[in-house]
Image (tube, rainbow, N blue to C red; front, side, top):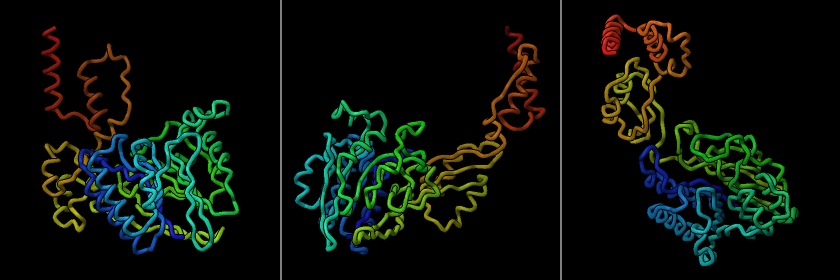
Length: 376
């Protein structure tokens, strides 16, 4: 059986105010094409289909079109809800879609759904675990000692009574110990939601969602990551889709197929003049989302307007210069009441700008101080 694994589509998400719907539609069409070319039989979607609990109408249309394309290709689809999804809304009409080969995780009610699909080696059991919290599980099992996320998942897996002589795949949307994170995720500070890998020992493959960077936790425990870059912290991510060749028990081959966005997310560093000059010869797509870092020592007036004549989709501009470095340091003023106000301001200016005041600047501040003191 050939299986593909995606997650965290976040349909309807924006990037610094820019809509990503066209980009998401583009990448989903690309995924369908890859599935056809690779003759994939089953697609796993491991949560956060939508970016909000109440999914936007345009995002729903894109997802419906995506599912329809998969049905037309006779690809089975297994879908779980993530922490961004409303499990109730996502699974609406699930019983009707099963006839088309689309299986949704049910709203957690104390048990999780198992879908068994056969191939010429025998049955493959897919366990559809929606995003859960300890309180969710505790609600149904009040007498069990379930205090942590790991307690909750361990209890759920133990209750499955997995037949380890058969091939078993788990779909989950949870944080895992030692996973690498980025800024676009929602995880609990301190890693209290992180789960150890021992929980997954009975599964031939664990398909994970929730963490946005593609990564292997173990050879058969995989975060596929997002299909698109959703924050500047993902600049260096290589987005891909795992494709799993599941053969007889104990035999699994894994390949990662690169995904190419309609508009990439890039970072450009330099002075304002350097970037404007470079833009004329930039071989990349100028419609890409651009994170600009200016190295000019003085702030460039309305830089974003001028830069957007070359790069219309600039998401933000920051500075990397003496002033920005100085602003990161904590200033300490001792005996401030006994210090000359001009000297105090000079220390403040140098601490924030990273350079000393010019004679002209010093005179302006000196005159202002005198004027204020005289007014008092």
